[in-house]
Length: 344
Image (cartoon, rainbow, N blue to C red; front, side, top):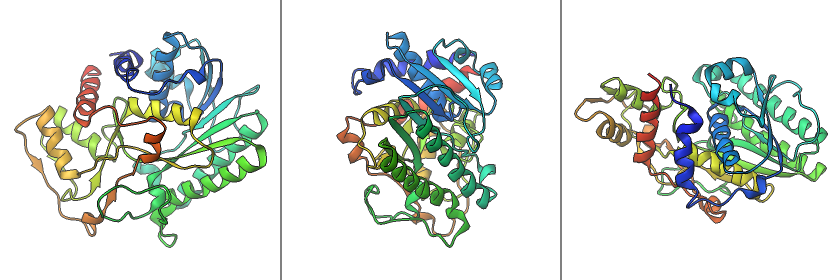
């Protein structure tokens, strides 16, 4: 098996030529919740790259099962600046001493976790409350909250992505809004915390992603397509594929999150994602053509309202901070597929 951080080091080296620097991280103490998920693994890999380049910092992460993670990811167990603490994000967080920075990325995005809408809402708010309580008692100066594009509710199908100041929200009469509404309420809690504790609070609204570490058997269409292509096809859709999505590469995402944590204005929401969208059916053909040419793409039945299911961010605010989707989608797909091939 290939080393995750070593594999992504090639991406981070490529990004150093175009991405804003992260020198302000030097000498800081950072706490990360969700340190072992997709976001967390990419962040740890970037931090490993920065440390190898001479930057110095201390990172403490929260994980439900640190030993299981270290057994699956031995590269992380060898990081001298990292300590993982066992804990549940919904309960009081462990951790001693003061922290300069906090990045709250603990969110269960697996489809099975969304079966109980009440639990989704309650757990999301509980995690945010614990993050803010920890920040208040550990001297945190800047914290970043990972929200979601789901906060906007149903997006209009007009050209262009949704802007952060758009007057859009979830429908509170629908149980399916539990995730997005929890993220919206979490933002308000964070803003109230910022005003009370003089702590800069960075609000991000995260869209869709691809990259090494993505679960190919989850409920993300792009992962399923890569899985099917690596298995020799066919690529299967559960719909007609008319919905529109865009995808930011995981290495880019990690750089974005650290840059935003260090530099974004407080209480100024920033969309995190790629601004260039494409239909899911076109994505399936693109994955097929890149990874497994000539196999079939099997289209499912059209779903009600499918053609109106846009999930596309406007990223002008991120661009104003020097950020961009630096990794083209084709390269992101190829890198993701190569990583999973190396794990066989």
